[in-house]
Image (cartoon, rainbow, N blue to C red; front, side):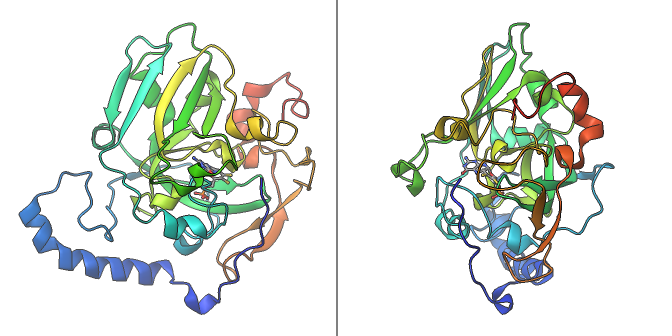
Length: 320
Ligand code: MTE
């Protein structure tokens, strides 16, 4: 993965989340009249600049660690379809169209189906889950995602007994996603999980963060979040989910197999060939964007109680 120096942004340029929300509330108020006239569907945006508020319950397993400020989560991104610069996607994804949007679920299932994103939002009760998010590049965040268990979604299509893995694919649309015109990765971006990993109650499909619809740069309108794995497994802007019998070749593995494995469980005992994974730089708003303090990295990103049993008997150094 390309390692770049964090952008040098003065702290005065960063809008705290509270101010951001106030500004948005003001805009929403101004938009309300127009919205009533237009009667938008639940899933549509009132204004391009007005984030959609989500209804959700609070998941009891959330971490109480300090949350990374909204501005850092939305301006320190890896989304190579838009840019290889951390601060690029925030600008380049601004006009990305996330409606209409469908997610096709196919392969080894009894009930293949193409879901409309607004039906997904209506039919799956949303929860706020505050997870640690550990990037393979040794930085981390704490993110209040809004989403629902992937397992609940997959059960709707009834995976059959031949299904062993799940393959996820991002939108391929080079007109909208300028990075897809470059050969920095093989497009479209593909990720995969073993079926039991996909069914683990911690794996979610996220549709929002900080109580509102996902900003485009964070993978709108729907992305995977697998908190015990390095961030690159958490594929953004998903259009296809396929149940398969063979281990999918994920994009980063295809690009550098010695560096990015299929499993990619967070593991402080298995260094990346080019850097240590023993510690991580936690972006928690303590300093300016891109700074943060160093903390020890935990096995399975601290989610071992919920996930370690899936890997019992496996050599997690070889199966990186
Ligand atoms: N998904 C797609 N489609 N394209 C990407 O470039 N980057 C991955 C992952 N999902 C990526 C992606 C990486 S390397 C990380 S660390 C996380 O998204 C970053 O998510 P965030 O920008 O919301 O923090």
